[in-house]
Image (cartoon, rainbow, N blue to C red; front, top):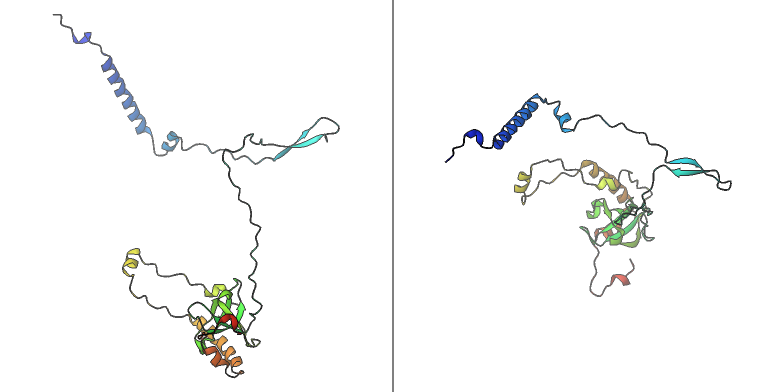
Length: 254
């Protein structure tokens, strides 16, 4: 048997192991030299900002040969793609529709007594004051007569009667518009957990704004002065509308 020395074996594995150790050591040395400011530059995140180019002209003038060709011609500076897109993409077009104001029925004029057909006060008789910008009708009971406050109503849910009240002496403030009836933003900013456990419990009733109450009083005062001029008109407004057996609304004259 021939015994071989350690030097006779191939030393490729040892050499490769030592090369890996040297490369790791050099990487560690390079990392220790990097500072926080130099890291973005090393990653390629930080560099010189690209110079912003000014937008050039969309067309350029080119001379064209031939006496009948006009000598010059405008040519676009940027070339148009020769291919159509693979997918059909719809381009959004500007709508030509214009928001027109809602047309008011001929039977409804300021001072007309209306019968409400839907909502909380269905069956009540109210006085029409004016039409708002949204197309809704501004009506009131008055509140002192039948408990209907200033409200907005759609004209599709009312019946116009032949009874009218003169509103020449009644002044309606310009602040009573659609924004007047919008709900104020909630000021309570509680957490979700407290809101979850408060479900089912009666919420505290908010006080009615004094400014709206004073507006209601001024309009009611002016309307009551006109209502008192006609006999039994206050009783007519106070009575609720209803149909008895054998009565049909399309056969009645209001």
